[in-house]
Image (cartoon, rainbow, N blue to C red; front, side):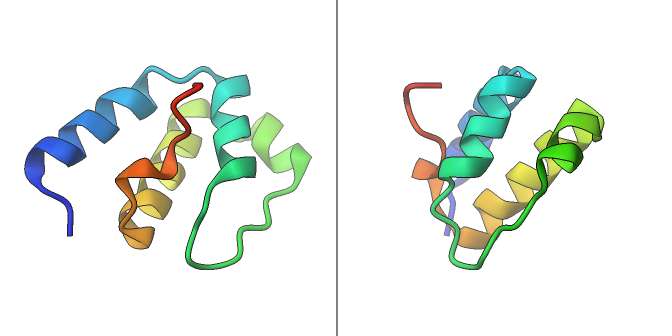
Length: 71
């Protein structure tokens, strides 16, 4: 379970990602369930919506380390 500071840190990190960095995170995400997003979806979905989806994946997977630190 996340602590409130971990969630805030994760939110700040996701908010700072541009589209190419966020797409890379989707590709490398160690989710606990299969992820299958098409290139078209990742290119055409509004960036804020992608960030929301990625946060949900991180929270559902319960992994604060879901984002690679190279981002």
